[in-house]
Length: 272
Image (cartoon, rainbow, N blue to C red):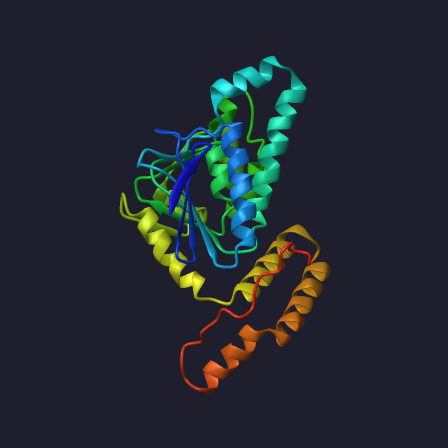
């Protein structure tokens, strides 16, 4: 069943949660939209039946062109406290997506700019139309990406290319984005969401707990020192030794068949 609230559509298609940014044509990220997204992330994380999350912008004009500039004018007029609250909310919700315990995919058609790109890179995968355009144009307005892009975009494409995008503010095309490692998979125009759903179905067949702990170990590799990250990976590998999914995986290997995962659940909250 699909429903819309706060300019966001939500639909559960079997084990796949599909979240559509729905403020056409360019889906500016208002505070209400970001708040609603945060609520949906909690819901999807807690629902064991939902195993993969896909985010897209409805239509073919944009994933999101970034912050709601009309709202931004109002926040600036109210002073630095209001602006600080906006960026704090962005980081809370975007951070929750970046740390989401299940696989996540951004499906990109058209423009993905500014805060829209900062949101998209919070996902594990970006599946993008060959006609998509990617940019961080904030410098042309006299500001810079303040919702995590300086960290998360840099991790994906490296310091030099991140500086090029952020200091010049010029967009790049989808082929360049793929070559730089910003995009994982290119689709024909109009097919990004369908391709993302197909990928999501494949991921949904995987072992939920193993993928959650793998994501945590990968995050630790880029956020912590080497020894701390290695120690976390060892702990998680040991933890999985008692999981029902590992038992099923080994049994399936011995029986020369595909495993039927599903018994092991994610840990929620993540540090449980």
